[in-house]
Length: 177
Image (cartoon, rainbow, N blue to C red):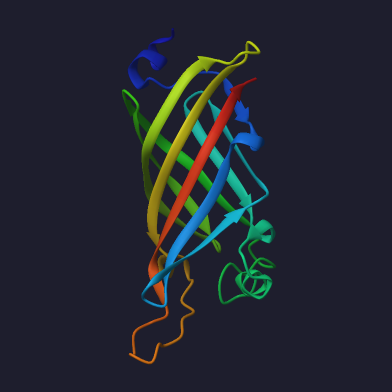
């Protein structure tokens, strides 16, 4: 075990995404009583010598309504034509047993801002096929307004239909290259 690995508890080397066992999603309050959820079908992540990076293609956003999926591509929301990707790059990773805190920069709609992602980490472990794996089950909450996503409409009560706080979740299974 290297000195860096002993200090951080995060393995060194290069770890690539297992897309079959991974997901990226988001959730935001809607109409004051519900939660609007979506996922991204086309994304990638890698862990290289203790640095976690990821990207999601905006065009791959999936929600339960085609009209809403189309609206999310417009300048009202993600503006997929001008900003086709969401990006994340860690600046620090701290592990305490199975708990993990990842500090980094999230880029959305051309705006980069600091985020702190927290959750759990499993591994590294060897799977039944002899491959080393590590898993992250993490989340963060950001204000969509901080990234220029300000669209909203008013409910009959005068309250906004869409909440400002967006929960972003990532379930990542990574395999050592």
